[in-house]
Image (cartoon, rainbow, N blue to C red; front, side, top):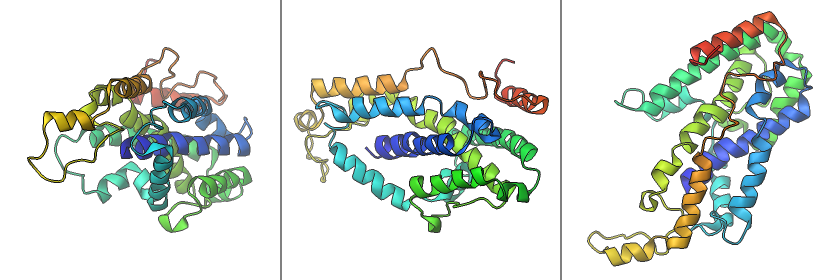
Length: 283
């Protein structure tokens, strides 16, 4: 439940919705940061709207019939976001804070940091092109309104947790936009795309237990395990959910592609080509 409600639903989908709405509300379509960000958000509102309906609203919706139910999941997310920090959303700082820099065979760290650095390099090039100095950042009222709305509605005004309420430097903009793009691409893939492989075998991670977990060793049996796990109908509901979530659809747009070609500047087009090359995408 913690994985599905907090790390997947809230930290990627629901925060992405905040970024999407702030982008639509505060940036005109000709703003360079709109052009940079929106391809990563173009299906967010549709997916989240359909997801709420199919996963939470009907009587047999997977989240509704889970052990926590909708109210419990919302409470779990509420508690989690009250403890969230900006550094926890930034992969290099997250890895360091958890002491995971040197453990062997940690592929999430190794692949994730490569992707973070590629995104950061691209974002740096684009942002520095449009904002050659900190003063350019400070006087961009649309940019300031964008981050203010995210701070207020996404991070609940929690400045003590390190979230920016405004931008004063180019570096702050680069870091935040890197985090946003990483969260809605690589991080979402990490917590979503393998769910069917793992969770379709319900004992690996069920959303529903009919009995509490045992507290004493040696007291479980096949009978008590089967009484605890979901029945066939509930299992099918959960398996169908993770199949839909994990499925790769034919209209998927790979990261690094900008099919609407909103950028006109030759320099930015070259940056996109270099970004694609770093991501091993065909030119």
